[in-house]
Amino acid sequence: MIHLKLINALLKPGLAFKNIAKSDSYSVGLLQKTVPFLLIFPPLFIWLGSNLFGWRLGAGEALFLDNTSLVIISFSYFAVICLGFFSTVF
Image (tube, rainbow, N blue to C red; front, side, top):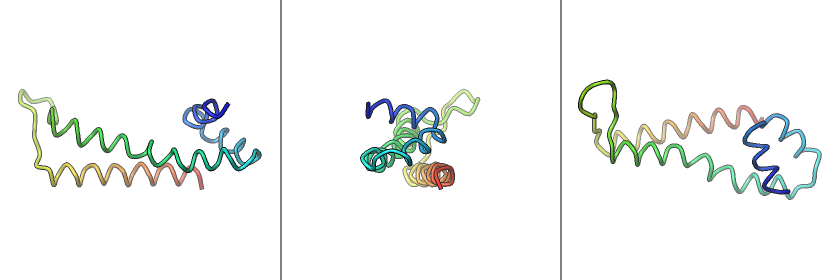
């Protein structure tokens, strides 16, 4: 039951959050613990993939950036994801 609410929250966030607001507080606690971990995965994978494989921008060779640039790009992407998520929720 809990996993269905989590999957529903990922696929239909507007409807899911309305249902969660009506239900008990256990689901809210579960989402508050789970969502930050879900938000960190895409920037982490961007950093890891760019570090290992580089950026393929249509050229023959991949563009490899230094670690500082990759961290800045990953944090910026994380900030945009958080801004989008929290502006949707609130």
